[in-house]
Image (cartoon, rainbow, N blue to C red; front, side, top):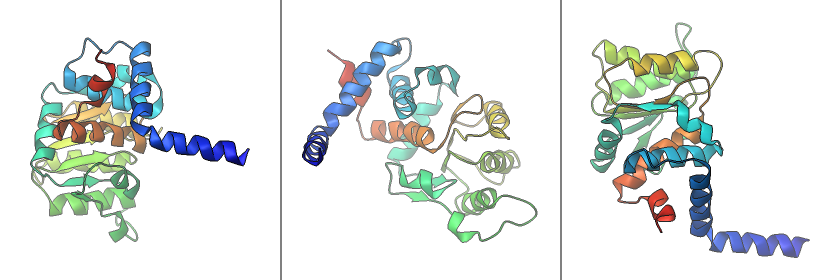
Length: 216
Protein backbone atom coordinates (compact mmCIF):
# COMPACT_ATOMS: atom_id res chain seq x y z
CA UNK A 1 0.00 0.00 0.00
CA UNK A 2 2.80 2.43 0.85
CA UNK A 3 4.49 1.72 -2.47
CA UNK A 4 1.23 2.47 -4.31
CA UNK A 5 0.71 5.76 -2.49
CA UNK A 6 4.29 6.82 -3.13
CA UNK A 7 4.00 6.01 -6.81
CA UNK A 8 0.72 7.91 -7.14
CA UNK A 9 2.24 10.94 -5.43
CA UNK A 10 5.13 11.02 -7.89
CA UNK A 11 2.70 10.74 -10.79
CA UNK A 12 0.62 13.64 -9.47
CA UNK A 13 3.71 15.80 -8.98
CA UNK A 14 4.91 15.07 -12.50
CA UNK A 15 1.54 15.84 -14.06
CA UNK A 16 0.42 18.91 -12.12
CA UNK A 17 -0.34 21.00 -15.21
CA UNK A 18 -2.21 18.15 -16.82
CA UNK A 19 -4.33 17.76 -13.69
CA UNK A 20 -5.29 21.45 -13.77
CA UNK A 21 -6.07 21.24 -17.48
CA UNK A 22 -8.22 18.13 -16.99
CA UNK A 23 -10.05 19.86 -14.13
CA UNK A 24 -10.86 22.81 -16.38
CA UNK A 25 -12.05 20.48 -19.14
CA UNK A 26 -14.34 18.71 -16.67
CA UNK A 27 -15.60 22.06 -15.42
CA UNK A 28 -16.35 23.17 -18.99
CA UNK A 29 -18.51 20.07 -19.38
CA UNK A 30 -20.55 20.97 -16.32
CA UNK A 31 -21.19 24.67 -16.98
CA UNK A 32 -21.32 26.70 -20.17
CA UNK A 33 -19.10 29.76 -19.80
CA UNK A 34 -19.19 30.74 -23.47
CA UNK A 35 -21.66 33.63 -22.89
CA UNK A 36 -18.97 35.41 -20.87
CA UNK A 37 -15.97 37.35 -22.13
CA UNK A 38 -12.51 35.84 -22.28
CA UNK A 39 -11.36 37.41 -19.02
CA UNK A 40 -14.66 36.73 -17.24
CA UNK A 41 -14.34 33.04 -18.10
CA UNK A 42 -10.90 32.89 -16.48
CA UNK A 43 -12.17 34.46 -13.24
CA UNK A 44 -15.30 32.33 -13.08
CA UNK A 45 -13.45 29.12 -13.93
CA UNK A 46 -10.88 29.64 -11.15
CA UNK A 47 -13.61 30.45 -8.64
CA UNK A 48 -15.59 27.35 -9.58
CA UNK A 49 -12.44 25.23 -9.58
CA UNK A 50 -11.62 26.38 -6.04
CA UNK A 51 -14.91 25.09 -4.61
CA UNK A 52 -15.99 22.46 -7.18
CA UNK A 53 -19.41 24.10 -7.34
CA UNK A 54 -20.58 25.40 -10.74
CA UNK A 55 -23.57 27.11 -9.12
CA UNK A 56 -21.12 29.60 -7.60
CA UNK A 57 -20.99 31.34 -10.98
CA UNK A 58 -24.59 32.49 -10.56
CA UNK A 59 -23.72 34.59 -7.51
CA UNK A 60 -20.59 36.34 -8.84
CA UNK A 61 -20.97 40.04 -9.62
CA UNK A 62 -18.63 42.76 -10.84
CA UNK A 63 -18.67 45.97 -12.82
CA UNK A 64 -17.99 45.58 -16.56
CA UNK A 65 -14.71 47.48 -16.12
CA UNK A 66 -13.48 45.80 -12.94
CA UNK A 67 -11.60 42.79 -14.27
CA UNK A 68 -9.61 44.85 -16.77
CA UNK A 69 -8.95 47.49 -14.11
CA UNK A 70 -7.65 44.88 -11.66
CA UNK A 71 -5.39 43.36 -14.31
CA UNK A 72 -3.88 46.76 -15.07
CA UNK A 73 -3.30 47.44 -11.37
CA UNK A 74 -1.46 44.15 -10.91
CA UNK A 75 0.62 44.78 -14.02
CA UNK A 76 1.59 48.15 -12.54
CA UNK A 77 2.68 46.57 -9.23
CA UNK A 78 -0.15 47.95 -7.12
CA UNK A 79 0.00 47.10 -3.43
CA UNK A 80 -2.22 44.15 -2.52
CA UNK A 81 -3.74 44.31 0.98
CA UNK A 82 -5.48 41.28 2.46
CA UNK A 83 -7.65 40.82 5.53
CA UNK A 84 -5.84 37.71 6.77
CA UNK A 85 -2.48 35.99 6.40
CA UNK A 86 -4.31 32.94 5.08
CA UNK A 87 -5.49 34.93 2.08
CA UNK A 88 -2.14 36.69 1.63
CA UNK A 89 -0.19 33.43 1.44
CA UNK A 90 -2.56 32.07 -1.21
CA UNK A 91 -2.00 34.90 -3.69
CA UNK A 92 0.21 34.81 -6.78
CA UNK A 93 1.88 38.08 -5.85
CA UNK A 94 4.93 39.26 -3.94
CA UNK A 95 3.59 42.78 -3.40
CA UNK A 96 1.21 41.83 -0.60
CA UNK A 97 0.55 43.23 2.86
CA UNK A 98 -1.52 42.15 5.85
CA UNK A 99 -1.44 44.13 9.10
CA UNK A 100 -3.26 41.56 11.24
CA UNK A 101 -0.12 40.59 13.15
CA UNK A 102 0.28 44.22 14.20
CA UNK A 103 -3.01 44.17 16.11
CA UNK A 104 -2.99 42.46 19.49
CA UNK A 105 -6.46 43.69 20.40
CA UNK A 106 -8.90 45.90 18.56
CA UNK A 107 -10.11 49.21 20.02
CA UNK A 108 -13.67 50.45 20.34
CA UNK A 109 -15.32 47.09 19.89
CA UNK A 110 -13.91 46.51 16.41
CA UNK A 111 -12.61 43.14 15.26
CA UNK A 112 -8.83 42.65 14.96
CA UNK A 113 -9.19 42.07 11.23
CA UNK A 114 -11.23 45.23 10.79
CA UNK A 115 -8.72 47.36 12.67
CA UNK A 116 -5.78 45.78 10.82
CA UNK A 117 -7.41 46.51 7.47
CA UNK A 118 -7.89 50.15 8.46
CA UNK A 119 -4.22 50.46 9.46
CA UNK A 120 -2.99 48.97 6.18
CA UNK A 121 -5.46 50.94 4.07
CA UNK A 122 -4.41 54.26 5.57
CA UNK A 123 -0.75 53.41 4.90
CA UNK A 124 -1.60 52.75 1.22
CA UNK A 125 -4.65 54.93 0.55
CA UNK A 126 -4.55 55.27 -3.23
CA UNK A 127 -4.71 52.67 -5.96
CA UNK A 128 -4.53 49.63 -3.69
CA UNK A 129 -6.11 46.27 -4.51
CA UNK A 130 -7.99 45.04 -1.44
CA UNK A 131 -8.50 41.27 -1.22
CA UNK A 132 -10.93 40.23 1.49
CA UNK A 133 -11.80 36.57 1.96
CA UNK A 134 -12.72 36.07 5.60
CA UNK A 135 -13.98 39.11 7.49
CA UNK A 136 -17.08 41.07 6.48
CA UNK A 137 -16.06 43.70 9.06
CA UNK A 138 -12.93 44.39 7.01
CA UNK A 139 -15.06 44.99 3.93
CA UNK A 140 -17.43 47.28 5.85
CA UNK A 141 -14.40 49.35 6.91
CA UNK A 142 -12.95 49.62 3.40
CA UNK A 143 -16.30 50.77 2.05
CA UNK A 144 -16.64 53.35 4.84
CA UNK A 145 -13.09 54.67 4.38
CA UNK A 146 -13.65 54.98 0.65
CA UNK A 147 -17.04 56.64 1.02
CA UNK A 148 -15.58 59.26 3.37
CA UNK A 149 -12.70 59.97 1.00
CA UNK A 150 -9.97 58.67 3.30
CA UNK A 151 -8.85 56.13 0.70
CA UNK A 152 -9.25 55.67 -3.06
CA UNK A 153 -9.29 51.95 -3.78
CA UNK A 154 -7.93 50.70 -7.07
CA UNK A 155 -10.06 47.58 -6.88
CA UNK A 156 -11.81 45.50 -4.23
CA UNK A 157 -11.90 41.73 -4.59
CA UNK A 158 -14.05 40.61 -1.69
CA UNK A 159 -15.87 37.33 -1.11
CA UNK A 160 -15.97 37.07 2.69
CA UNK A 161 -17.87 34.15 4.18
CA UNK A 162 -20.31 33.81 7.05
CA UNK A 163 -23.84 34.12 8.32
CA UNK A 164 -23.34 37.43 10.11
CA UNK A 165 -22.56 40.44 7.92
CA UNK A 166 -21.06 38.71 4.91
CA UNK A 167 -24.04 38.99 2.59
CA UNK A 168 -24.82 42.54 3.67
CA UNK A 169 -21.23 43.74 3.26
CA UNK A 170 -21.19 42.44 -0.31
CA UNK A 171 -24.56 43.98 -1.08
CA UNK A 172 -23.16 47.34 0.00
CA UNK A 173 -20.08 46.82 -2.15
CA UNK A 174 -22.27 46.27 -5.20
CA UNK A 175 -23.89 49.65 -4.56
CA UNK A 176 -20.57 51.53 -4.63
CA UNK A 177 -18.88 53.21 -7.62
CA UNK A 178 -15.59 51.35 -7.02
CA UNK A 179 -14.10 48.57 -9.13
CA UNK A 180 -15.06 45.29 -7.47
CA UNK A 181 -15.39 41.54 -7.83
CA UNK A 182 -17.66 39.91 -5.27
CA UNK A 183 -20.58 37.54 -4.84
CA UNK A 184 -24.04 37.67 -3.35
CA UNK A 185 -25.01 35.66 -0.29
CA UNK A 186 -23.11 34.17 2.68
CA UNK A 187 -20.84 31.88 0.67
CA UNK A 188 -17.22 32.77 0.00
CA UNK A 189 -13.98 32.27 1.87
CA UNK A 190 -10.22 32.44 1.54
CA UNK A 191 -9.79 29.87 -1.21
CA UNK A 192 -12.52 31.34 -3.41
CA UNK A 193 -11.27 34.88 -2.93
CA UNK A 194 -7.67 33.90 -3.64
CA UNK A 195 -8.85 32.09 -6.76
CA UNK A 196 -10.52 35.27 -8.03
CA UNK A 197 -7.37 37.30 -7.45
CA UNK A 198 -5.09 34.62 -8.90
CA UNK A 199 -7.10 34.60 -12.10
CA UNK A 200 -6.38 38.33 -12.33
CA UNK A 201 -2.69 37.81 -11.56
CA UNK A 202 -2.32 35.10 -14.19
CA UNK A 203 -4.00 37.21 -16.84
CA UNK A 204 -1.75 40.11 -15.87
CA UNK A 205 1.14 37.79 -16.76
CA UNK A 206 -0.50 36.80 -20.04
CA UNK A 207 -1.70 33.38 -18.87
CA UNK A 208 -5.21 32.27 -19.79
CA UNK A 209 -5.26 28.76 -18.32
CA UNK A 210 -8.94 27.96 -18.80
CA UNK A 211 -8.75 29.03 -22.43
CA UNK A 212 -5.63 26.96 -22.98
CA UNK A 213 -7.23 23.90 -21.43
CA UNK A 214 -10.51 24.10 -23.30
CA UNK A 215 -9.47 25.31 -26.75
CA UNK A 216 -9.33 22.41 -29.24
